[in-house]
Amino acid sequence: MKALLILTLYLSFATISAAQTKTFHDFSTTNIDGKELKMSDFKGKKVLVVNVASECGNTPQYETLEKMYLKYGSEKFVIIGFPANNFMGQEPGSNEEIKAFCTSAYHVTFPLMSKVSVKGKKKDPIYQWLTEKKQNGVMDAEVTWNVQKFMIDENGHLVGMVKPGVDPDCEEIISWIEGK
Image (cartoon, rainbow, N blue to C red; front, side, top):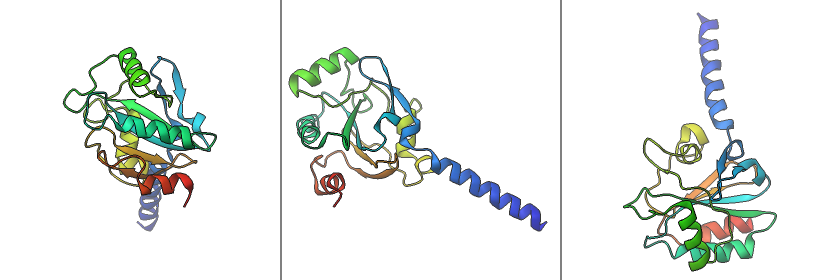
């Protein structure tokens, strides 16, 4: 009986540990040009993951995101935008239309991915990991609107989330980038 209890506890712990050992770097996705991108390419960098939309009240945050990317984006930091049409149809375009809008209206140079779903039954696997504590080991953080920001450390671990209406250059994100 004691051996069975120990085995059960061990298996439970192993299952929990396995779920928490998966990192952002274990995923791959498709960029906006249709090419595979491995998140392991960002090992050693802090990553700000943002679900974006072109026709939202938060769309002007693209400007701040681009300024931050130009200021901090180097060997140590990257922003990755994931266009998503989950909130009131505010990202209706094709990948080509989204890219054209982002580059012409906001001169975006940070990486953009192909359009994904960030909630619901078709939620992208990266967003499943970002939003479910059982996968990321840190928190449940359902995406509530466009331009929600997730902070990933250099080792691929989720370290925090900032709500959609908060500007990307808020103290929490800047302190995290600068390592304060």
